[in-house]
Amino acid sequence: MAPTRWILKASWQRRLAKQALNPSGCGAMLPDMDGFGGNGPGWKAYLPALAWFAVVFIGIPACSPPPAELVVANGPDVQILDPQKATSAPDGRVLHALFCGLTQLNPESLKPEPALAEAFGQERGGRGWWFQLRPNLRWSDGRPLTGEDVVASWRRLLHPKTGAAYRNWLFPLEGLDPNNLAQQLEQRQDLPGVHLDGLRLEVRFSIPVPAFAEMCAYHALMPVPPSLRQDSPSTQGSWPSSGPYQLQRRVIRDRIRLSANPYYWRAPKPEAKSLDFLTVESQFTALNLFLAGEVHLVATDVPALAVPALLEREEVLRRQAREHGRQPRTAEFDPVPYWACYFYRINVTRTPLQDRKVRQALNLAVDRKALAAMVGARRPPAYSLVPPLIPDYQPPELPRRNPEKARQLLAEAGFPKGENFPPIELLYNSAEIHRDVAESLQAQWQEVLGIEVRLYNQEWKVVLDAQNRLQYDLSRSSWIGDYLDPSTFLEVFRSDSPHNRCGWEDPEYDRLLDQAQLCEQRQPRLALLQQAEQRLLQYGPILPLFYYTTLELVSSDLRGYVRNPRGYVDWAALSLAKSEEP
Image 1 (spheres, rainbow, N blue to C red):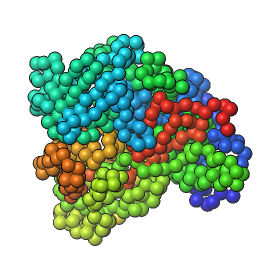
Image 2: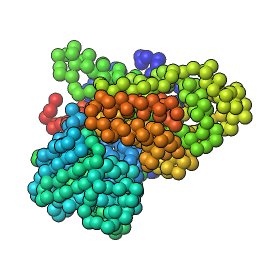
Image 3: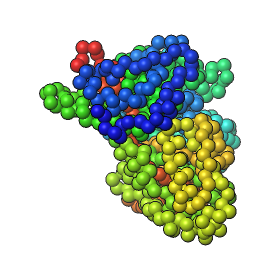
Image 4: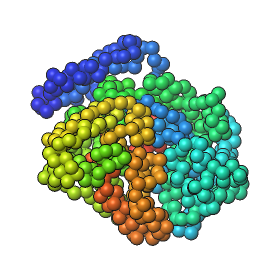
């Protein structure tokens, strides 16, 4: 008999059944309960632990195309397939399969390695970088990919009309005027600070940029083809790619189908000839798809309720393998620390949230330990923005929960016991975990502060648009570090950062970040970043809640996948085990 903690309440059973209804009208099916991913009859005794997740299974509808060789449950619908404009994780996963940078990351060490550039190096303490491009590079349509494509792509990234969120990465280019970009770029054909000589690309910065090789592995700095640079409506979405895969077709709210790129520079070419990224908003649906063997990778979170059962499942299978003298199969679920933080943004331009004491009261009323226990999956509570994963950087921390102090601060702000405090709205995007977190904080703030928080659930693109326009009070957010340095989190909240989305401006915070940029020695630089983070936490335009762990589900048949704190995937290395493999 399954442990009692695995038994669903009736309300949850109804929710699961409702979640699993097939909206397409193309048919539904019950899962094959015998194998659960091919793990054999020995697992049958433990089926009650997970069977309740498969109340009704959403299969691939009969009207959908046959599945690809590799199938990924990718979360919300992809918003844009432009490497220079995309900002979300679902978009980024697809783009890293489609495009390639001058460098790529080693998925185990997370250090940059040669990619489109066969060699690279730094000079002058990170103020200068050089890249030697590979000869005979080609786009997926067979046309040459050249150094001119790299320079032209970076010019497009920088131009204000592109609206690229990461254009500030190139602001330190020597001779570049970030305050007069449009005019400067339109008056010249080259790019200040960048020199191209045949296959050799040299980059000069006015300040040290020690992480530039890592940054070149990110989709924002990847070269884009001429058809994309021209922003032609006639070629929208049909442009060639440079990565291991090329776009075959896209069905909105269903899937993105990729096929292997015949001109990919790396040998051997991807073994899998096709790759599907499925749009799967519901965590329960994604889990059911995985358990039925319909997807090989769930790249988003699994439901918190499923975590204990999934961990128990792994332990049981390991124990069975030991008892029978077998080599344990690759773990399908194994949470590890992730270079990401889950937090709430606070719109500091709105009354009464513009009052720092109100923001501090909200922070002190939150029980992060209870929240982390609720979301589960070994996720630790967050008392800083930067996850504590860099050995020589100790993030400053927020004060712990203090209901009495929280009520005192709210009273000092003019709202004793929450009296006359106007209702505020909390905006979050569709997913079970976001709803659960929002409901928990709503209850905590009501209990401790006596204030009313109204919850609003919208699609991610609606939430993101509201954040960009500052049309919200509180809003769910997160940040995944783009490279292993505290600045990848802290630069987000510069006064002029397009990622700020809080309305918070602090010249002293900006000054500390500027000083850190100019510092060539690591320890003094990290000390300045600590001061900046302390100020960010002190003024409270954000509420860090917990740090992520990787919660992807990886089929034991999937080869080449490496769990790492960045969630970085080498898509070219993925393949399925041959049928003769045990």
